[in-house]
Image 1 (cartoon, rainbow, N blue to C red):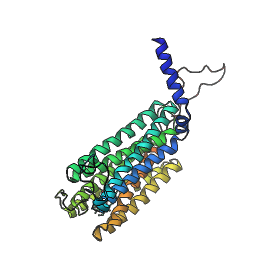
Image 2 (image 1 turned 135 degrees about the vertical axis):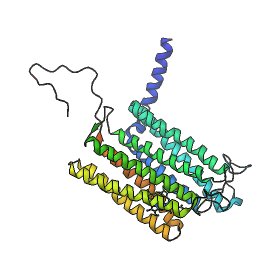
Image 3 (image 1 turned 180 degrees about the vertical axis):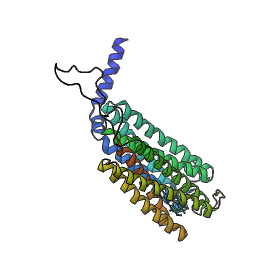
Image 4 (image 1 turned 90 degrees about the vertical axis):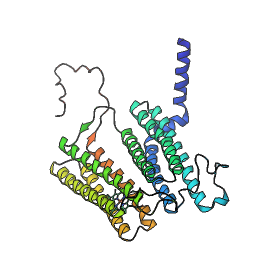
Length: 329
Ligand code: HEM
């Protein structure tokens, strides 16, 4: 039994010491960033599918047609666009697997957990994408597809930032009420995104002529979406002032200022697209902007804390006469 265990351990160590796994370990930061970018990228390619009316370019799932797994020339440009978007899933899978191997190589459970969560989200997206096709582009399912992308971006972002942090208890760099204000701002950002998805479900860009709409009034729901944006911008400005008032680290003040400007850009695109009857280029830019607003929001949250390396389990004896270290208050 012991021999079996030690040979398994030897195999595992040899695997972790192999060159590709070591490469993934040393490149984990870049790989996690690639995962953030790829997950934002797939929102934009999803926009291309919807805005070119290619949502049912492949009319079934997991095959493209009943006879073929891939799109055929007879299916035209719409088939190629939708199938191309399906293929991008493999890019996400490759990056996710590399992140998982990198996390294993680093031998940190926290990183392994995050990389597994991001990796499991991808088959989740595949299944929701499939249900999207099978339900004839039901707008609520399309919306769920978008929201899961937002969750995956959060997971990939967390992995990216955790690579450089330790696994000790998080230490706040600002007074606790400011952290709470940042969480309220994040919640407002999520509410804006959720309302945006509902606006899309009520609008003309369904992805296919025959697709259902959610039958809500686009004008009313756009008003709710815009009102939430005003709330979000107000909270962001309040956060920026509060961070300056307490002399927060410059990186935190910068993160809040960046969030404000990204929101302003996205808000401008939102208004222009609304008043110009949703030209496809602006709608695509608005989808990219949503990913950027979300990443800027996560950056603010991360800028308010730090995580040191785990403290050693047993305190190291201090030489006689040396003062005990005092914990930061
Ligand atoms: C921080 C600012 C904003 C964020 C984060 C945001 C986010 C979003 C999101 C996530 C969607 C759904 C995209 C999709 O499902 O494909 C959306 C759609 C939409 N947003 Fe915004 N939005 C913002 C500002 C605005 C503003 C100020 C307006 C002005 C009325 C606006 C108008 C719209 C419209 C009309 C749609 C539907 C587009 C379509 O039919 O495809 N947005 N927004």
